[in-house]
Length: 442
Image 1: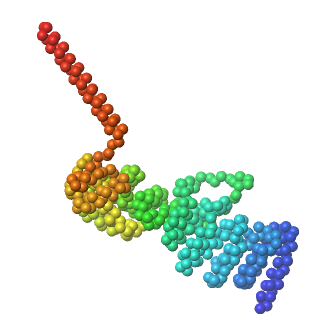
Image 2: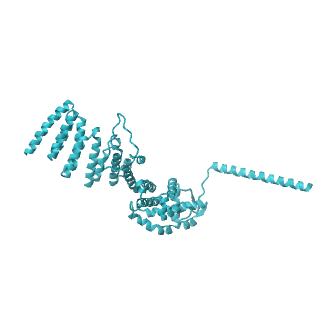
Image 3: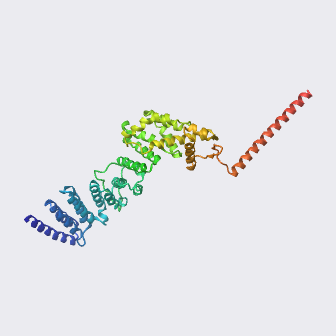
């Protein structure tokens, strides 16, 4: 009881000192008086008094910005020293309220909210933690270090994915440009010009840029896996594969390269997929996993692939993905793999045939007539190829329909060729006649 009275008396004296310094405009004196009051409360473990004094000092008339900043920074050091979780939450909430709307302590407020969100997440309140993190728009903070900004936004994306809010996760992920990870960290930083914001150093617990790059693409894989966008998942794994720390050890890059190969095979056929497929085939590291090199070669080769034989060869490899980095492939991946092989086979058939019976097409695809027609129709609808089915006759035509201009051009070309042939024939006849006349005269 006596200790409390002494504490109150000392605080009262320091408050008078703080008032004199503040009114005199003495920045250093005001900061010292304010921080001394907080230190007294901390030493006495009077957490309730500490919260009250922080609010009181911040609301005093004409309070200096430097004093508020010093108070918030000092009180943040006490957060980890709190005796229990309730006291910790109360202190963070107090500091959060004090720093709200003050641009000069925006970085401290962002760090406070991150700590509070972590506590909420540990308590299982993921939705609350996500809502808290979304309050802060760190991309507008000029003084915050680049790596700290990226780490904060990635934490926002992770919490949105954890609560299965995929729309907001995508919006937040777009705040990070992938090009930011290609910046060379070894380059010397330019000295700030006069009037520029001084960028703070990132705290020690913030990962490096390359670690953040990996974390970013792992989160994007989670997002694209939900939408089953295989090509984008493949591109994310390709970006992870290009990280120097991953390429150092085969134990790191082999699982990533396997995933790249699987998702390439699962991706629908389009120019981007073909380009990526050819670039991966040129990779020397692919020779370390010959099975996957053979799989990609089969896709590039214009030959029909037997699904049953392929599945028997690669079923074990497919199941083994569960035990490797990134876990098993997305749900229904086996069904989609079969679909891609059928699509590949239809494209191969369309290259070799201009017209084919539906029965023969079904035999080549190892399907019944209904399934062959269904897959062919889906490819036509998605504009992967041009085809027409004459159902009464049971004939599929892969010939593209020509417009009137193309038909006229082809006729003109044919006429030109015909006239050339007539001219050559006339020339040959004339030549033969002249030779014959000459022979008779002799």
